[in-house]
Length: 283
Image (cartoon, one colour):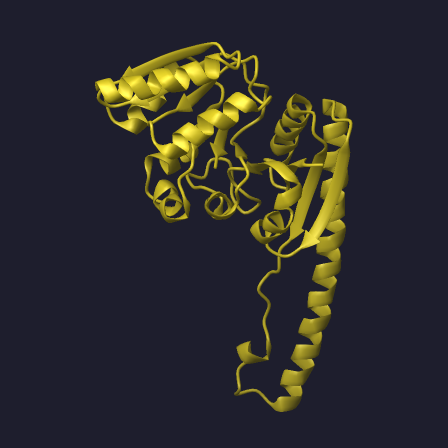
């Protein structure tokens, strides 16, 4: 059975990620897994010690460093278990019924790759434990996860409340059409009004693409408001989102060679950084 995979790390966003994951698990009738990764921290080794000190002193320091590292690893393990227990309580109070907890060593994205076959949706906080909510940045795992994983990713950016509507940023490309198809077939956003927005010139070809995407969603029971709005992508989407009080935005991610451009220095990166609503990325 595939799970909703909520990635928690003890940061301020952990509660928000947990609440978002409960909403998704209930909408998709899927079990929820709370995942905490114990990522290896850089430690000093013999190569880091100055060759100017005596051999005996160096060996003594190395013994202390090994002992300290063992204590840190034990504390990190215990702390991670506390994080999972707390998230489990939050999820249970929020209405989740099938909750699993999993603690794994290693890099978060590597762990998500290992678990991909049993994952239906990944939920990440925009910022990790080393950032504050005011930081104008994107957590280091988000780009790598979008570049590597083939599962949808829901990014939370603030306290999560179930959305009452959603917007699809549509550009008529293959990735956007794939996103439309996945949304149409998934129960995650069913029952919510959909705003389908295209930025730029309203050519006959683009209008036809938009109407086709709209029909695909309407055939699956979605209420769709479709628009082509002149202008550049970022300001068009931002203004539309604010004007219509959009509560969740969805968009397709490009293939591997494009995803890096898609995130680094792009409109999407800017949208993630400055947005105050969740973002659903579909592959």
